Length: 165
Image 1 (tube, rainbow, N blue to C red):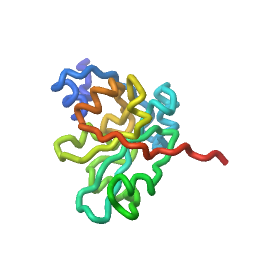
Image 2: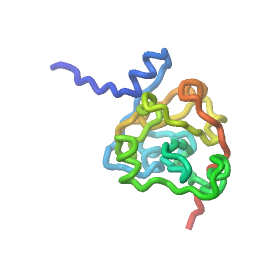
Image 3: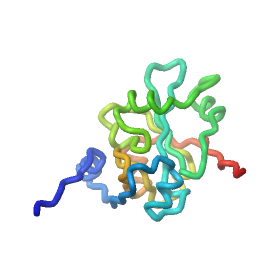
């Protein structure tokens, strides 16, 4: 039986740049980043979600990657972007802008579109990082420094811990 080729664009980009990576799969019906972390067997603070933000003064949205166990501090990120106020793109808008499903949005899969990519400073402290491969149900683990260099990530301090009920 022929082996099915599940290589995604993000993997092709990493290979073209000689960046080693590992692939981890999970049930594609899982959309919550913390449950994804649990499913792939990594601590929540090492599995990063990618959010789409549309600054009001710019036509081009930006991407922000932050740990799955945190939330974006909109005020801090607005200040970084030089804006008074920002909002996350709705799921429908994020999918329309990226061409990827929520839960599968990946800066690596969007490299050809030249998005500005921000990485929360918590990621800069990790040797390896786990991010979406560009398809719901698939995560990639790679060296954080390689990701930062490849994507030209801007390091920012904009994540805050999620308050427990």
